[in-house]
Amino acid sequence: MMGKKKMMMRFVVGMLATTLLVGGTVSVQAQKRVKEPANIYFTAKEMPDMRKFMPAPPDTFGIQWTHDIMRYFWGKDLRTKNPERAKMARQDAESNIEWMMKEFSVPFGLQMSKEGTPEMYRLLKDATSTARNICTDVKKFYARKRPFLRFRESTLTPEEEEFMSNGSSYSYPSGHAIMGWCIALLLSEINPERADTLFARAYMYGDSRVIVGAHWQTDVDAGRLAATVAYGKMHTHPMFLEQLEKAKKEFCRLKGRAMPGVQKGDIEKYYTTEEMPNLIKCLPAPPDTLNEYFTYDLMRYFWGKDQRVTNPERAKVARRDGIWNPIDTLFSSFNEALGMTISKENTPAIWKLLTRSLVTTDQMRVAPKAFYHRTRPYVRFHEHILTYDKEEDEVELGKEGSYPSGHTSRGWATALLLSEVCPEHANEILKRGWDYGESRVIVGAHWQTDVDASRMGASIGYGALQSNPTFREDMKAAQQEYMRKKNMK
Picture 1 (cartoon, rainbow, N blue to C red):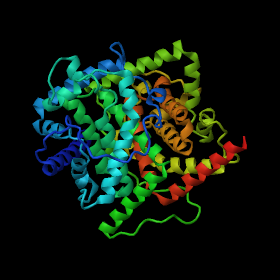
Picture 2: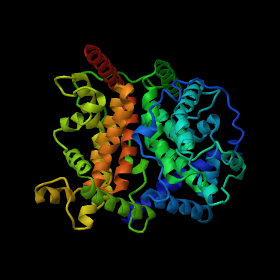
Picture 3: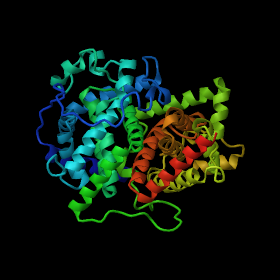
């Protein structure tokens, strides 16, 4: 296991060194908020409503609240023990798009600037401004107090504190995390070869908000997932797609590459395993038993056990969600949210899109499962899970690594895909996808961090699919099929 930890550490240290070299000393200007106007693709009211498909921020009696407290002190401790990471976190408080373009240039593999890459500049500026709209009403609704205010302490960015304390700047979700993750999704769609480094950098950018003391960990986690939802929503706007195409052409011209074309023939999947992002490089390792995340995992495991007894209807859904094959069982669980029956016969274009997409994204879980080979919770506690009737099936599942959760990845990827096919029902679709992942904790097959990481992994996989012209053609066909079916009712 030490070899694996050292490998991850070298990767993170390399990313940190590169960031500090490129970033230099940056004056934080966040409190001024003077920005050039952007073209907005969707208003806050037109965006999916996070309150309807994601849980509220934890109250002071919740399990996640304890987790947030531990992560806040982790961040404080890091400021002292790791001054280089603290310096990076302070620099990451900047959210000016020109600075962020410079910051992401090295992981992207091309120097970006307003003058040198004007199409990418316009795309990133307009898209990140639009993406942040997904949290506008949510921030006001929950009005969550920032951690440094609750503890009456200072942050690493004192020049930001006046703005963050003025009664209109709230903590949940993190706008910085939304911007960083959105940029990684956009740039990895333009240059899929650099997805690993882009998402690793974006992950660190979000965690910087915990380190400086400006956000709770759950704010950051929610921000990353919200960014993916906003990113999917933008793919339904023709102006966004037009600007994205311009940015892709600009990149190919500067790199001397040809634009990718639609794949010919009846393909099984959009990309091979080697062509997809490597989650070992994109996401953190699962927590060991000395990590504060493991305490969180333990509490959530017993929450799941309690649900089996106190909420039999939810337990019944969780058991049904555990069926892996046939894949149509997963699709049918979204029928009510979508408002129509998904099947090879009734909705062939939607079925083909989902099937090809999941065959592609399913590949991403194999490497981290084998690499970490994390023990499943029911195996660690020598208990049973809710899913199987036969003990031999339970034993067989226990041989497979727990991190990340394949079921969760499938469920969240399906939700992202269907919410792009049918934006009008995005809230219901995404809620079903969220609950599908939580079912894995309830049945006892996965730790909560397995599920959380899998949603992030599915988001990364969803972003990778967007860069494939054949996927875009299949998505268009699925959207048209949905509209035809809807109008026939």
